[in-house]
Amino acid sequence: MRTLLLNRSDVSRNLQALTLLEDMREAFRTDALARTVAPQRARGPLHAEGTALVLFPGSLPGIPAYTVKVHAKFPGQTPAIQGVVQLHDLATGALLAIMDSGHLTAVRTGVVGALAADVLARPDASRVALIGAGRQAVLQLKSLRLVRSLEHVRVYDTEMERALAFATRMYNELNLPVRMEESVADAVADADIVVTSTWSREPFLHPGMLRPGTHVITLGADEPGKAEVSAGVLKQSLFVVDHRWLAVSSGAAGSVGLDEDAIHAELGEILAGLKPGRTSPEQVTVFGAVGLPFQDLAAAWHVYQAAQGDDAVQGMDFSA
Image 1 (cartoon, rainbow, N blue to C red):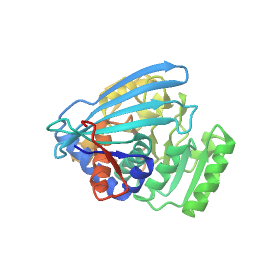
Image 2: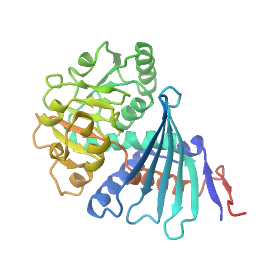
Image 3: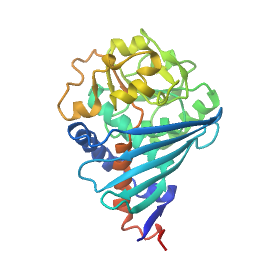
Image 4: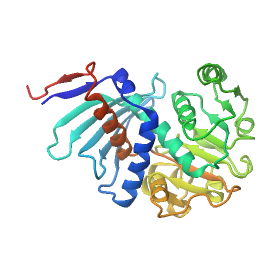
């Protein structure tokens, strides 16, 4: 059997964010209505600079495959996240594909953030604040443009040079006004949508910093010990997550001492019509994501289907 081998360029060439957005919308809805298996995350700190992480099994009704993702998370490296996604046949376990996980994860996370914004942000939201000017900020901003018409962007990063480089790059690529700010407070002061994608271990968004009606996407609090949004903000907002238990055990809720009582709904429950979303223009909403195996499956299956007709993709028979 031929197993497809996809490097980052192969993944990028066969991954279309706009199509993936609709695939992911259906994946969240399906997971909420018929979750078949509990998501599992095995995390092993290696030393002060690195962590080994495995997400499995990515499974969704209607997709005849499952995924296992193996990641190396080294914040000091570029890229900080490296690894592979293995795509297996659901009926036989046969290895269908091995693909670069770094770009796939970055794009699917950007798309999930945009999906949450489409569901929870005000329809007229147009001003974005980005806290953290790394790779994920780039993907979040590009993905947000799929669901909202953006007016301007503010960006803050603890490394001012990186924020300046980000502002320049995004202005040139998107023709969108992007301004560097000198503090978190300045960046979020007039924002309709705030995206936090940092390695922070202390909350930096506190009550009183956000305007009524703001939507927050917090992505950095995806493992124990990391925090971006304070308990006060979460308790005052409509707090939505990708998975309740993981949000408490290793995500935005548990990192600031909150339990499941603080969580209004999972995003899939809102998409499936099981729970309401935003109820007023003045309501502050927060989406906290840790990243789930079924999201990897939706993205990997999307890539695999497209790659079937890509003559540049290499293959190997592991049974030979």
